[in-house]
Amino acid sequence: MTFSIVARSADGRLHGVAVASKFLAAGALVPAAEAEVGALATQAHVNLAYRPQGLALLRTGVAAADVVAGLTAADPGRAQRQLGVVGASGDGATYTGAECHDWAGGQAGDGWAVQGNILAGPHVVDAIRDAWLGATQPRFAERLVAALLAGDEAGGDRRGRQSAGLLVVAKGAGYAGTSDVLVDLRVDDHPDPVRELRRLLDIHTMLFERPDPATLLDLDGELAGEVSRLLAEAGYPVGAGGVDGALASWAGVENLEERIVPGRIDPLVLAHLRART
Image 1 (cartoon, rainbow, N blue to C red):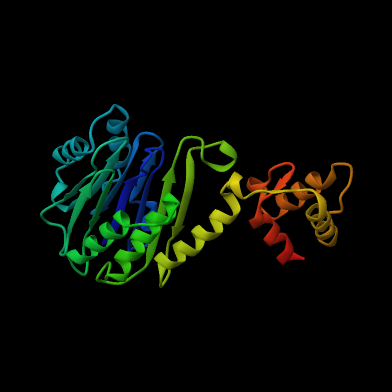
Image 2: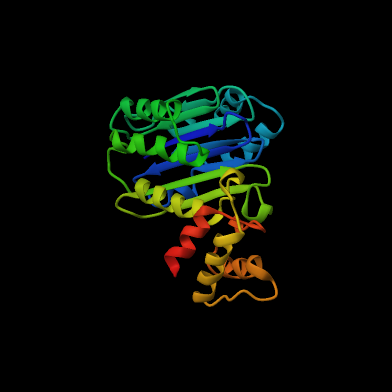
């Protein structure tokens, strides 16, 4: 009922799962991940116990292939299960039970595992693999969604489309540095869920991603004057806190607080301010 990719970033810092299915809210069931530990996808006849059990094994340093072997060996329903696992290092691993509905199968390599069932054919898995390995997207989450979209465009779930999900974790990378969950997005019921997931990820990137220091602009001179004028037009005149204080107040209302850097301005924030006023 599902196709997914489980992967680790090249530097080993990020782990994630992207999934799509002709099934309600697949993103609520399939993925699990823990920062600096690994990630997994349980699908076909989902076994939710695989999620905590699999992460517990990965936490102790068990290799992905051995996690798959251990989980499935202890499961009397393994013939109807499908599982993908990636650990903190090494190759990923994938498993497809003999009773999964055709077409079902998977592939795995260094830091990734791709699997699917009730697919249009094996070319769906090939497309996801090729998109992952040949990706040019600089951001890990975008790369996962691009790989998922390649599978969707190759035929995906042969029954149609309904839901998609994306989970990405990294140590301290969550909102305001208060969690390890960098991205957790779901499209539970939609006619084109993977493209909707990509749209949501674009919004998430704008609102929650920290700015690239190399792109920041100094908030002085003519630019500071323009920003002050725009803020005043938006109802946030510069006061005792200076331009930084007014900008921070405005950004908090616009949900852009993660992109605020004292004394400088993110070009994305500047563009948003200009567009708003």
